[in-house]
Length: 202
Image 1 (cartoon, rainbow, N blue to C red):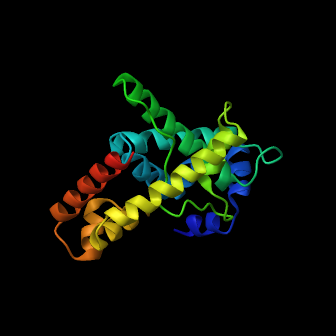
Image 2: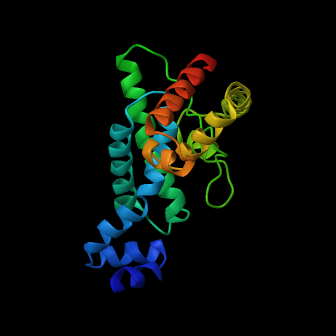
């Protein structure tokens, strides 16, 4: 506990530097610290295809790569770099899965506010990372996302909107059930309805 409090007083960049200087136990601490972000990105991707548990595993691989590859002199904050690595890893996993099923994969869509730590749109950050992205495509994708967000808001009930909000915050269906004082089955059913409505809109 005392050691965790000591870690909490350091920035992520300091923790990674200490990890590389011979404190391997910091790897577990950083992985645990950012697990919430992995779950949030995996939950968003669940809506366009993929098993959540599998996507979380992919996200943790992305987080590991972020810790391994982060360079303070080249990258922005570790948070932003980790967010990009996690999302990219999950995206490619879904892309590969959809390709096997011979289904086209739409651009990554975040139905949450999509705001990163410093207020920028994480969707655009992700699209900018893709080698073939161009300004026209970025504008089209941004407009498409806004249209989809609006259609989803109109098609979901108040109950479903609340379930989706909590789900995109990283909660699983059992946690949502506890918060909303509902049966887990009711939450699970709501998530399936949300996913079905999302598929129809796409």
